[in-house]
Length: 347
Image (tube, rainbow, N blue to C red; front, side, top):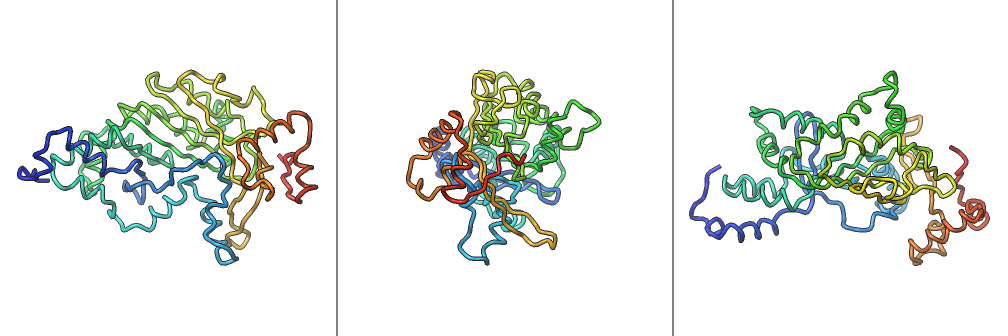
């Protein structure tokens, strides 16, 4: 990279350069591992209220022809970043992102944009393998790979202040995390989970960590032991880093203070809990390996009523919670009204 001393941009005061760079960089970037190499690109997640997305927003269109693509999107291990996964695997190999081009203009611009990214861009990861790879690379003082990303990443990561980790894990992996104290049940996933905070050490200036967690099975979230899964993660957190947890909503009848976090009071002051509606639509492969759709509604199920369209979703959820807590079986009521089968007892 050659410094361009005659550039009008680079002749501006440093604070003006930074203001311009901030306008050029994305709010979020993805880093992922593909075929042993780091790839990165702008995150395409729409800025919207994720609290009440049930998976229908991933439907590319009406008709049976769209179902295979819809099923694949529903099965995306990238969770709410399913659209980003499509971009990751269809973009030109080794490039295609404007931000990379800006970084490679010259050395002075490289460090200027690096500083802008560190304080203004959220880094998004969707698997622990990529995080482990980044942690390993950060320990190396020099790299000799021809891939440009390997020379860029070590300069960017230590200064990142906000990180988003989305984990949509196989149900069996989360079950093993519930039993992580039992060494005989340890798996590669549980081992990586237990090393999560040590792997995060490559983000030396991290101030905010967002963790989005779910499993890929229609099995309801209230069957999971959140406290067993997250206890080590929370207890070993860095004291100067705030954590935002995004977990599926719990069914009012099955909330258990011994297994679940019922509110922020159950957590340390630096950990904030957010609940979101779990997806109702799932994609899987049948015995012939063909993609098929599966539907299983979860709380709040009143949102599935056509008559509730246009109503405030938070208000509708509060009404349903009150019905459950007063002893009314809303599932049976829904079955009488619309025929929707939720099978909450099928756990």
